[in-house]
Image (cartoon, rainbow, N blue to C red; front, side, top):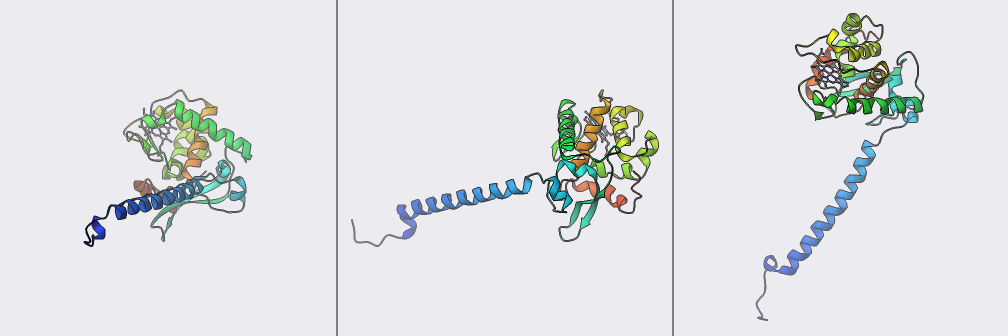
Length: 221
Ligand code: HEC
């Protein structure tokens, strides 16, 4: 050992300790973030909906409520706003019925591979319109789709479209008939309605165009 004073920057012990502290802090931070995220993405309950408690992912029974898409000035983008109760395919669905319907819709969505053409919550293809907020798309609210399908309500019009898309083309590209049954169509519409109620921090961004038109709309159901 020479009596020379060694600079802290060249001390191996200093760097070892620093590495241990940085790793330790990062582990604690990541654990906290993981638990925080789990809380944020946990699905809400029917009681939350009844009591007006906002959850990023509402319960399946959100299909029993009217859903709007409104500008939140503070956050700088539109957010889903859950409104009054409204019948869905002519009735109010119990928590069990709604959960089963949503599950059927999700499985059908996977079986028919909607993501082969569409995007859902950021996953999928860009051949066809993004489906994340499809339920809120102006054309289902302004009477266009109820008009051309001859159905009275928005959900019936959407189910009719899903069963026979080639009969009701509204884009330059046409959706092919996928052999979707009535039950599957109802479940898919529930799946789409629930997805539109998820707070996705304003994504997809380009959707607001049609949502703006929705604001003054008539909400023909
Ligand atoms: C082969 C590609 C393809 C597949 C697979 C497909 N679609 Fe489509 N879909 C399209 C195209 C193209 C359009 C636009 C055509 C139109 O609106 O007439 C469309 C339009 C739609 C619309 C209207 C969009 C809106 O903004 O209102 C909905 C809802 C929809 N599809 C749901 C589904 C669901 C649910 C599935 C899975 C069961 C599915 N699609 C599978 C191609 C596809």
